[in-house]
Image (cartoon, rainbow, N blue to C red; front, side):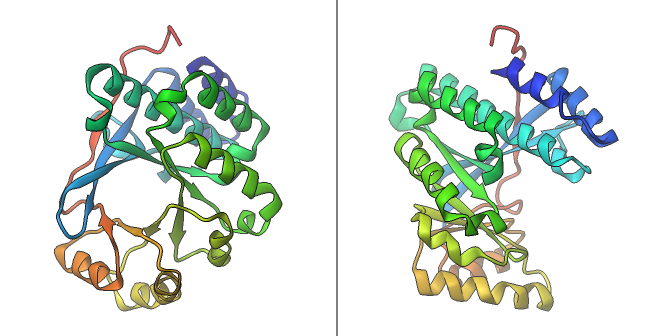
Length: 256
């Protein structure tokens, strides 16, 4: 799978940043940053949130660069692959009940893309035990309106993954369509450091209250922010004020 993703990325280099990120991918310099998702009430860790980082100390997000659409899709597929690798390692080392299920943000279009759809089917067919501990957290906006395309994917993921989440952000317009796919949980990606950001959050806050979904507050930067999200009804959270992301990597993918 690793070679498949590398070949796919190499064939979709369009920008200088694409070239930079592909070079890091090829040399195994991209790591997964793993961060605990905790229950709001107890502070207990229930999930792990994984995103891609690279750099000498794994301090840079790969998504801060100007990447072409298909290169972003390749990185999403690589994220799922790394989540499978981590879960497989944990299954070999620990009892399944002791494993934290892994949340992986991924664009809906990356999994509807023929190359992404093919790799997803391979993951679910040949790595089903590991995939059962993965939680895809789907990102999208306009694509949410294409119910007939997204619903089969959502049903497929529900059947094979631990759970299915959808992401909410203040830049979304069509977030209300998420209800059609009956997610297990929502993940809010927003900041509320100033009044404008708080104002932008209001439509999402009203949506969350009306639908009564369990939801995760992401990017929580302070105890004050956590208290605000708690009042809004968040059941879980993650953020830099409580847990610094831990970078993970695997030394070689040559055998994959």
